[in-house]
Length: 405
Image (cartoon, rainbow, N blue to C red; front, side, top):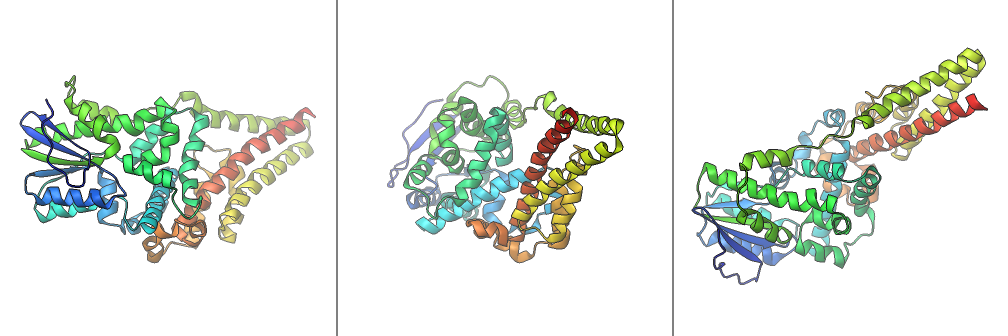
């Protein structure tokens, strides 16, 4: 595999051409906030030299671009039950970041991908989606860093939506060199090899695997590969490297979510056992003490969960419901207070079609998270969960504090 002379590019976009067996891969590095990049993609496809187009998207992100109202088909309750609340919030935050860029620069981030999709369709060219699912990437990022960095990373995504009305020049410059995820995490990625690997380097390898798989199915002659400029060097090197194992095997490995430590799963059950033991010890000393311990537990745990729901402006009945549910759910690791709170909120205030239609724009502003019913349900889930978690630890300390006093 060797580099050959690249096609001329009036817009001076970074480009490399790699020969992979019988297929010529023209890898175009784009800036996701550049009109020039979008125009160059359109020019290359219109040249008629390519028989397929590959883009740095996964099926879900492709659907988000081509079907912007796909949120309306979401079963929110099912998504929460499957533990996807944090990932949904992160996707919303990233979408809001993109919307702010579009409003500020007059260029929709990812416009070159939209043009690649539409231009390929107009010329009846196969469209190859080669990037890894964003959910898998974020979960691998989550597993790759110590627990104390996880909250910082993901709260950073959410906070990026609310910090100022404009995206800084520094952030825009980062986007010209990479993509949305890289710009969001760049500060951490520069300092953490553990974070850089799943966020950037793994995706280079993954896209190389996907291209090899697609070419094994159908040996195209000339493929245009549209990716963020930050992936250009890594993808080219991954394609030029000798194959050491089947692409499918490597791809499946890169799609696997590393398992958490077993002791982490045991902690909630250990806390439950300790709290119940505390109640038992209290009643063994006197019924009055046992009842006082239970009352303190209910007030602290239920109260903090209710405060979280109140901050999210949940329905009054949701607040009351989570107050009584949290002390019980904290003793049952299989059911969370946030799930109960979100379930009640959905029953009382089911999102309307208009909420889904305006979701992406609403979450670009702080007040929009409370005004939009979809976003507010996520806030109810997250804040009630945080309140109950705090209540579990503070309530537990209160219980054992009374036992030893």
